[in-house]
Image (cartoon, rainbow, N blue to C red; front, side, top):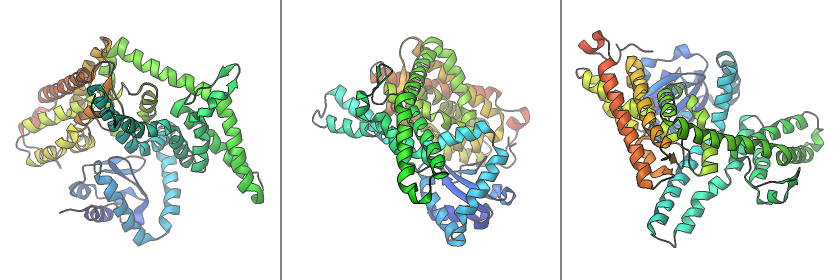
Length: 468
């Protein structure tokens, strides 16, 4: 049986060995490596390693391993690198990674990725609490276990009540401040005592500004902290810097940032609801059709703050079920490839292994292993996602909105997280209809238009397929 250690040991020499690795991190599905020289990577051999689902060459070199697997492989990989290179990895990695990002990343991409770095670590808790919130809602609606539902509600809601603190902690960490000071400043946003604070004739409400207010507060706190450390004498730094950081940032948060962030958060909620209830079919078509390219570029994580804001405000995000249709279009396209290229055993094996993950909303294996290398099927998969998004958006125009109580899962894994303005059965039926529409549209468009004459008429191996 191929273990996590075996996977890590197989990957390391194929990315140039320990001396070529400058940093190691992971997100939900990808092992993200900083590499000193990317020409040392043996991509063909990497793709053949059991468990490797795809490769992405971006600001970091990303190896797609899938959810769960990557969390087990990463520490094994770090251990292998660390045993060989001892303590030089962190310092040299930080320097080279910063230099490489400065050369290759645009300001917009750098900003989006920093935003993602703040929110991605929160996803496991969002998923767990979202599933529990959905389960608790189901029990309440059915009238089952009335003695247990208050406890379940408390467990499910506690994280969301304090999510601002975690956002503040991660923001300070990402921007070079002291994480606990970022959390302390952001805690002002959700502290119940702010209801006693009145400024300009208006009384504040606990949670006003939500995660956006927390992010802004912690970012301000980081800049205040850095300013203090550059000017306060070393002998007084331990007392003066934390005090001024919390005081100055806290006052600005109370008397400015919470108002501004509250207005922005409300605007996001209003805009999302208006978008789907007024232009639902068209909005769903555009969002569902463009989401796969965002996933391919890794920019989909920049939507996490918007989802989180909507969940914080309304209890669910109406955008995620629409965006989830992109993965369903990908599944339909992969099935069409499986049918059309019946003599390509290697590709069909890849599809069989990647389809279960695709049905559960993990799209990278099918993107990087099937549709993107073939070219046209990637575009027809987007068409399938557009059709599914238009289906869900159409019902939103009729007044039947579908949302998700947490972010992270999609595909069939999103069913336990569904919510909306109708009964759960109605929301589930609309979402299922969108998935089926996306499957069918992705399959039919790929079957009809996803192949050139040469590609459709002869066996195609994975190595021979044009990579784009």
